[in-house]
Length: 381
Image 1 (cartoon, helix red, strand yellow):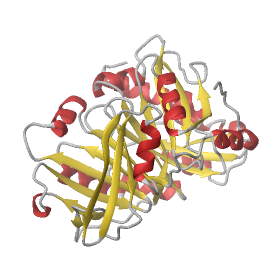
Image 2: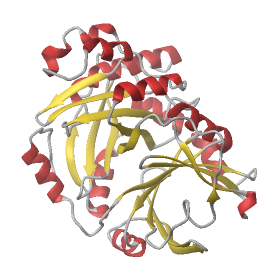
Image 3: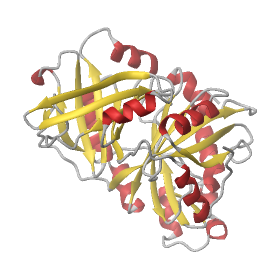
Image 4: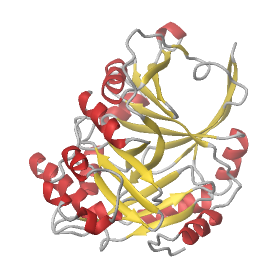
C-alpha cells in the first residue's frame, strides 16, 4: 500500500479504517527497559521525569535472576529490569545494546487470541500464552518477536487488581517527586537497517492489522549531510502508532546509522510522551536534570510566518527550545531530549498536540541539524 503524507482528516480517517480489527488493542500496557542498574535508573526516571513508584520484583518477592522496578506517570508505565546473575539473556542484551527497550507490552482483552491471530499470520513466537496468578487475581501474557530483539507482549489483565502483576509487590517510597505532566505514550519509533523499513511495515500490516498513516522519504527528511526514510503504522483505533525509520544515502552518517552502530542492530529509537502543558512540563524536566537538543534562535525568527497563529508566546517557546508545526487539523509543539543513556541511542520526545495529527514534518530539518550538532561533538557524523 503506497501512502504519501496528507494532512486532511478524511485521509486520516480512511487510513484508520484500513487497519483490521482482528487484533483489538486497548493501548500500551508498559514499556520494559533492560538496564545496567535498575535501582539507580528508577531514581533517575523519578527525579528527572517525575515518575512515581508503583511495584517491585526481586529477591524479596522470590525472583532470583532479575530485579524490576515499575514506575508510572498518568497512563505511562515503565518497567526497569536488571540481571542478578553474570550470564543469561538480560546480560547479553545489555552487553550488546546498552540500556534500551526490550519489551513493548500491549494491553488486550484476550492475550491468547492475540497470540494465535498474529502467529498464524506469520509472527515469530517469543513465548506462548501463560497465566500467572496471586492473591490479587491473574494475568495472561503472550509474546511475539519484532525488529531486532524487541518483543511485543500481549497483556490481559481484566481479572487482576494488584499494583502491577503477579510476582510484584507494591513499592512504597518516601521519595515521590512532583509529576512533570506527562500523560500517555503518543508514539514509539523503531530504527531498522538499510532496506528493512518496508519489511517491517509489511509485518505490522499483515501480522498486526495496522495501516500506514504517513510516509516520509529522503526528500522530506534530509539536511545537507544526512537523510532517512520513515513510515508510520497505526492500529485501528489509533491508540498505537509505530513509526519505522531506515537510513537513506547522504554525505555523512545519519542519526539512524549512528543508532544502529551503537545499539548493534535495530531497536526502539525514541518514546514520544504527550503533555497538556508543554511549557510547564519542559520547565519541570529541566529542573530535574533532563537535557534537550539545542534549537538555534534563528528558528523562531519566521515561526509565525510558517505556522500561523498559536496560543503560546514566541519568547516562551524560544527560551525553552520548543519546536512548532501545523497541519490541516491544528498545530503541535515538540521537543526532544538528548540520549538518556551513555550510548547515543534511546531518547524521549515531549509532544503537545493542539489538534494536529501529524508528526512535525516542518521541524525535521531543524531537528536533524540539532542532532547532527550532537553527532559532530561525539565525532560520529
